[in-house]
Image (tube, rainbow, N blue to C red):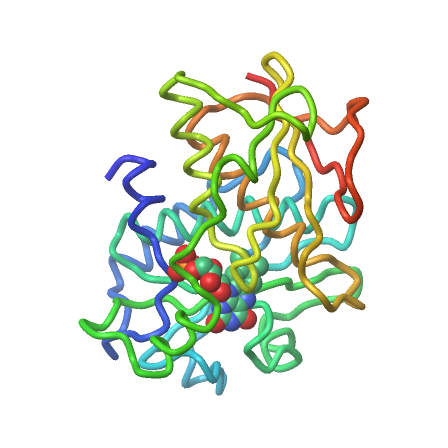
Length: 262
Ligand SMILES: Cc1cc2nc3c(=O)[nH]c(=O)nc-3n(C[C@H](O)[C@H](O)[C@H](O)COP(=O)(O)O)c2cc1C
């Protein structure tokens, strides 16, 4: 499957078929994990955990045997770096037919952190089950997708802009059209889709529109979403990441995150 196909077909999987992930697939995943990097250069450590052995579960997940957790040093840009690297894993797993769901809330966080061996100065923003999708979604999963409108995405003209937030971005470059579509289809916490992009020349400035209540954690879950969006964009269009805020006026609750230059 090519990258756009993977991004278009990936959906959160919360109902698994009850079969264990094969040894061969675990080997492929492990090899891939060892090759994952992110453009922030912040290392993300992955830990595979057997659900039964460690007593791990999530109230929204059913039929799973395996979880993957990720740990990252608590430092500037760690949430974006985590989002980028963990999404690489999510897309690769899907290329093997293995389903995932990003889980940042619906789990016993302390237990997962303990089993993943999270140390002082490290954070474990999210985990995911790994397994083969069941033929049918559970009633609970269907209800959840409906409640958070998981299949809906915000329209391009409200997400992507040119030269400032006033003008919608229009392009007929097929690579850019695909890269923007890849961002639009990305998973995000509570499907809030906080990513915004302003194009200036060859520079694509990514912003976070803070539209999820809560907080209090040492890290911002919507910055994980931005890392995922940047991963999708760069996986399709390439480019070089830098962090240097441009002189663009931003609205309330909007924060500059990073720039990808093509
Ligand atoms: C950072 C992050 C945290 C998430 N946390 C949860 C969670 O705690 N529980 C859950 O069921 N889904 C969680 N999700 C999955 C989103 O609800 C899902 O990605 C979104 O509704 C879009 O649906 P899709 O992934 O099928 O495209 C999370 C997603 C992200 C990116």
